[in-house]
Image (cartoon, rainbow, N blue to C red; front, side, top):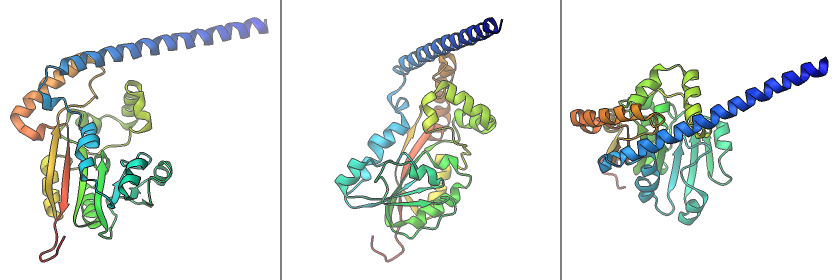
Length: 280
C-alpha cells in the first residue's frame, strides 16, 4: 500500500513537471514568434526609429570619447563595467568603479577597476580628478538626479566629460514602471525576458529623466551639452505584437507633437566648463 501511494505521488509529480515543461516550451515559442513579428514590422519604420539606444551608446556614442591615459569613473557599472580589460589595457586607462552596492563591485571581472568606491552617487563629493564619467542606464534608478548631477560635476576636472545613457520618464514603459508594484513587475519582466535576471529588475524612479530636465540640470551644475542623441525603440512591448503595433503608432504620433521629448531614451555628452580665466 505504501509503495502504491508513493508511486502515485511520484506519477503526479512527474505529470506536473511535464505539464510545466510543455507550458514553458510553448510560452517561449509564443514570445519568439511575437518578437519576430515586431522585428518584421519595424523594417517599415523610419530608420531613426529603429536604433536601439543602449546598443548605440555602447558601440557608437561612447567609444569615440575614450582616449589614451584617461582617468575614467564608471558610475553604477557594478559587476558589468563598460570598459573591458582589453580596451583598458590598450589605452592605458585608469578606471574607478563607483557603485552603491559593494557586492556588485566585487563581482566585476578581475582587474576591471583600479579603484572601487562604494557610495551613493546622489551624495558623493568628488575630487575633480576625472577626465571622463560613464553612466549607462543608472540615473533612472536614483531618487535624486539633481544630487547625482552635483556629484558628477564634482568628480570631473574642468573640461572633463560625462557620458550618460538614460531611459526617459516620458516613455510608456516608464510610466507603467512607476505604478506597477515592484514584486509583480519583476515577476512579469523575468517571465518574459529571463536574461534580465542577471542585469535588470532594479527599482526605477525616473526622477527628472527627460531631455528637457537634463538640459536644465546640466546648466545648473556647470555642464555644457556637447552632443546628444534620442532613441525611439525599446524591447518591452515586443512580447505581444498587437500591443507593440499600437505602441509604435503612438510613438510616431507623440513625436509629431513633442519632437525629441517623445524619445524612449536618450544619451548625452556633457562637458564641465572651466572657471573664468582657467585653462582646460
